[in-house]
Image (cartoon, rainbow, N blue to C red):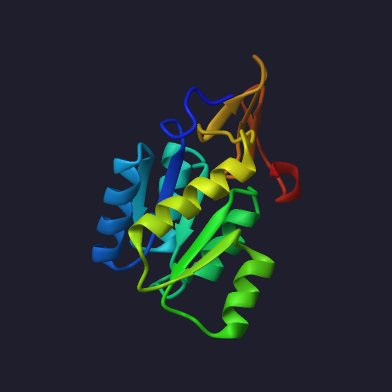
Length: 168
């Protein structure tokens, strides 16, 4: 169980708009969350690999290199981490696709920071103490270590590739 309902929660915000990232980071850090930011889905995956799986992702859809949907698909290969989409895209089809395929919530920009904070809190409370691996590598025992973001296991020092199903 987490030590505190908020302070131990790690969040990654992914958006190519630096102003939006500053608002999200400031708002959520003021509420006691630990926030990492990334300007693209590719950068976010690198942060997850380096720092471990966060409890929640806040994701824009239109970004360079890797779109928000592409990022979500990549994350779903190894995690069921909750996702909130925060984007200017407000077409009915996109909202429905986002909610049906990837996201626990969908917020259209411009957004109210206090509403974002409330929605983040609600999603995290609803998810409870989901058993996330906060470190990128988990030591199972003396012979077995698993790196979930890289879909790799080390069995007695030998590297073994894992399938997306094996790392969920």
